[in-house]
Image (tube, rainbow, N blue to C red):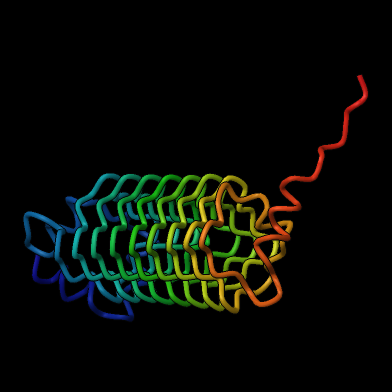
Length: 225
């Protein structure tokens, strides 16, 4: 096992691991000599396509780790450190990321139904990510890249979206009550009118609550019978 650990931590052999091995919970526990991955140090590792569905990774350090294509469905990542991690193409559906650190992480991925309450997502890349029905209450999305992000039914109550880019995002049915959108880019009154609530939200300069309400209250065109 000592030889495996030494090899795993050598940069020059990571490509070989990536091509020949798909990491699992048991494999990583064996490698680290631990009974649980909770609180483990897995920073700056290559764990592409890892099968970690339902794993307990609470408090785990995964900063700078390559988790491209990993299966993290339903995983518990409460307070985990995923800063600058690459999660492109990973599956984080229903994962628990409560108070996780995802600063500058690449999250071009599926996060349907994920729990991201109070998570730190400042500077994260969420381009075209699927956050349908995700829980983002109190999340910090300052300067996040959210072009084309899918947000139907997402809970963004009191979320910080300052200076975030939301061009072509889909907030249909999203709850933005109390959210801070100061300086957010690509936001339009028509877009915000699709949200389920913007009550007490701080809107970008030039967008008024009254205008959004007027759009919502416009008569719908009649369809031909």
